[in-house]
Length: 244
Image 1 (tube, rainbow, N blue to C red):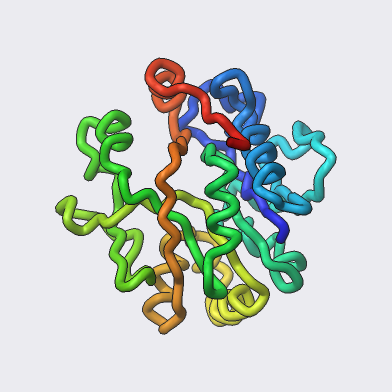
Image 2 (image 1 turned 120 degrees about the horizontal axis):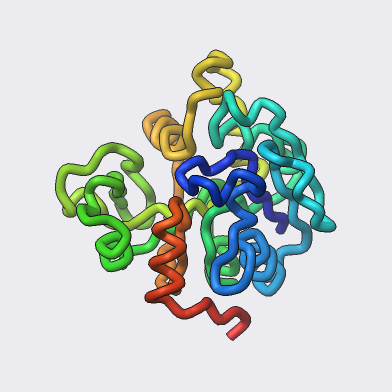
């Protein structure tokens, strides 16, 4: 099992913190976000890691494989994913957003999840979102399940009943699963692919009849989307303890 970290974007909502470094190089609990991920992936049994870079690509000096999204400022997450096509076609891969911190147990659980396409979700999301946002519904999106499969994701939620969990940005693809995704993306125009985010891709796949399995994660995890998130976690959350 290999892992791909999608780190091409700038993270403009971090304000001045990303003027000279990508978002995943910001510090949480004494360690860069990217280092938290590398540590969790390693302890969780991942053999090799690649990173898709774009914004300030030269600042990444880790001894890992790199893929380039040179059009990072004109594209979205799905285009970064396509940059790692060579790995995705050949290997079972965990794919991670670069602005999340998760446990090594989460890595093991998503790696062991059944099916060709799987995602993690937090069933106990509302406490964290209530502390991050005055109105959790201002950020949270629909997430509906049926017997462990995702049947809806990524739409604007009007009530909490439409949210059975929070999508985390930690996924798994087998080569067979990626082949279905790649075939679908090849049917779209460049303009559509450039603007597509990950949850839109997942919802479109669901509507096309592709099965996406959902793996619940009950360990603590953090999404760092803004400077206020960092301040909240430093003030109210203890660092994750890995390898326990």
